[in-house]
Length: 98
Image (cartoon, rainbow, N blue to C red; front, side, top):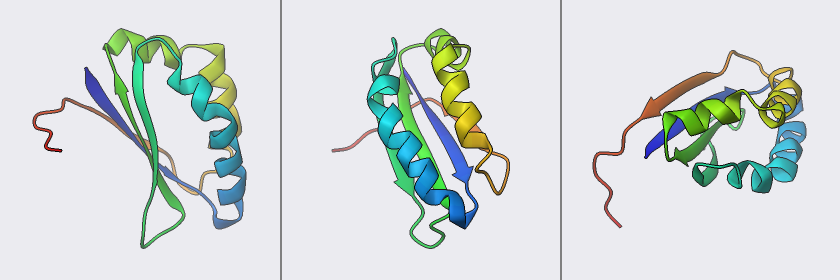
């Protein structure tokens, strides 16, 4: 399993539109094969910045999602709202404390 972190920076006037897209898509994304966790975070100091944080079973599961019509539809609606290009990282969990 690994974690995918995506930083999304939106134009201020597009925040509500993005939140609506995420709200209508989150359950479908979470049900994608290989996705075991999905979270949306918003920066406390700059509300234009969001992060998606998701857990994936394999890199192929993430690639299958990224090549799906579902992703292309959601991403097509989302990327036109950006103030800056998105950034993404795939990272391995090393330690978790609860």
